[in-house]
View 1 (cartoon, rainbow, N blue to C red):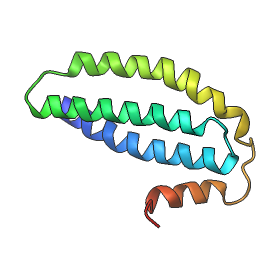
View 2 (cartoon, rainbow, N blue to C red):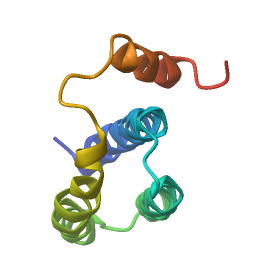
View 3 (cartoon, helix red, strand yellow):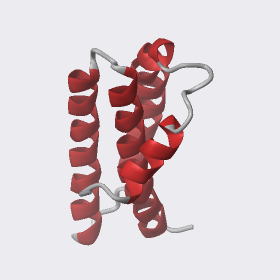
Length: 108
């Protein structure tokens, strides 16, 4: 798999995952959602910059790998873990469906 392929998949995953996660946070009334969205926006800007650098012919592989390692540890294990307590272990009927629908139709 090439760096171009990784960037394409990373971009698609990031957009979808963040929309899904933020939708769940909204439905659960997570109080820190504004701060969490800022973190997502910052990461999204970084990914866009990596894409620009890649498009400009730069070798971003090592930098991108380092960034993803930090993201996995810092964000997923710390920031995401902070909202786990507000997401019900048995989500109300339709909660996941609503989040998926919002992901699939963000402008509706």
